[in-house]
Each structure stands twice: as structure tokens, then as C-alpha cells.
Length: 295
Image (cartoon, rainbow, N blue to C red; front, side, top):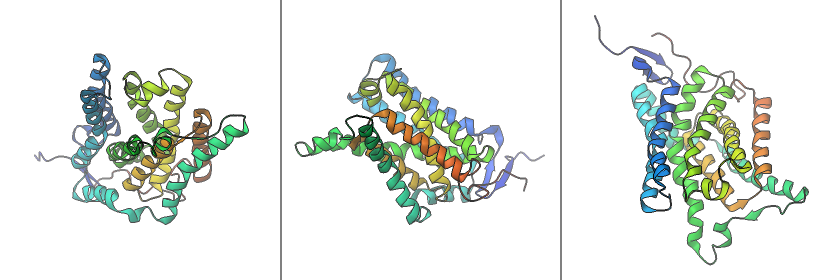
């Protein structure tokens, strides 16, 4: 009797099925649980993330989605699947000029339009973030914006979109996959609202209107991320750029939360209405491995 690991073949290579390690919820449980294993102790002990110890806990927790994503790629896929993963990380040609323009214009356009909407309704409109207003006096003031535009997107997207979204779309439509991943991605941030030294704790606050807008807004962002991902040949580097640019524009252009997140929800609705719930593309199938079949 053979004792070799059961396998099924997909377009991205061979995936193992032993123990259900390839199931989408296993990765999500590891990603969230692994991050919270570092963030919850900080919360319980009252450690601030702007302290030395807190910064270490923050950064280690941030690495979990990406590190787990890479680990699951090597557990689930064969050499072809692993090569495909790294190609999606380093190959900018998957994005294409048209979608690069979309990636750059959408976050900026939403920030500017939200500021214009606020002006029209009698508000103060958009203002420059702290990193911009203080840059002339202290160039280091831009560092937080640069940090949020680089390291977190890389560490997160190697897992969220780099691994999890493919697994979800093997079973669910693009709409359902976006909703599931968006909810998990939103909840992943939850401990940050209870730890000093974070934007979520110091600026947004727990159970405020801004809190609910932030949590729901991440779900809306998930739809836009899936849309870009599916239309750029599953480009991970494209999603890293998008995530980083969303963070950077939010840091340098400050607009009221209601208008800002309302526009992301409108975009999510427009994506589904125009491109369809199944794939969010013009194709009948999203560019991922089909449902596993027997060799």
C-alpha cells in the first residue's frame, strides 16, 4: 500500500491535500492567530507600540501574514506553483501600463474627491498630513508615511492576496472571496485599537464612528484589491504598490472619514455592477488555478 502524500493537480502545480492544509480557512486562522499572539500580550501588559519592546512586537506581528503565506505556498504547491508565486512578486510586466495608471489614480482620486465632497457640504475640505506640513522644518516627519507605504503592505500582501485570495477564489466567487478576506483582514487590525502608540488607538479610538468606518472600509478596500489583483494576472507586486499608495495618500491628504470610506464603498459597488460578482474581470474565469481535479 502506498503511503505517499495524496495530491491533486492544478494549473499552478501539485497541491497536497493531507490534513486539509490547503483549505483557505487554515491559512487565515494561522495569519490572524499568529499576529494576535504578539499583539495581545502587548495589549494585556500595557506596552505601547512606540516603545522599543512594543515596536518589536508590532513588527513581528506584522510579519506573520506574509511569512505564513510563503510557508503555505511551499506546503501546498509544487515547484511550478512556487515559481509562479515568486514571479508574481517580482515581475512588474503582469501589471501593464493601464492597470498601473488605475493603481496610482484610484487612491489619489478618492482622497481628492472626498475632500471636494466635504467642501461642497460645508466642511473644511482636504488638508495636508503632518508629514507634509512639518517636512520643511523636520524632514524626518515624512518617515511614518513612508513606513506605512512600504513595510506593512509588503509583509501583509505576500499572504492576504499572495496566497489567501487564490485559495478563496478556488471555492468562492470574487465577490464572496473579497467579503470573506475583507472581514478577516478588518478583524486582524482589532488589537491595534487597544494598544497605545498606534493610529487606531491614538487617533481613531475604539467603538467611535471612525472605528466603524475604518473596520467596514477595509472590507470595501478588499473588493478594490481583488479587482486589481484579478485584472493584473494575480500580480502580488501590483497589490503591494496599491496597498502602499492607499496608505501613503491617506497619510499625506487628510479628509473626513465618512466621505472617504463612502467613496470606497461606491467603488466596490461599481466594480461588482460593471465587472460582475463572479470574476470582477471581463473574463469568464479569474486567472487562478481551477478547482482541483484528479490527475
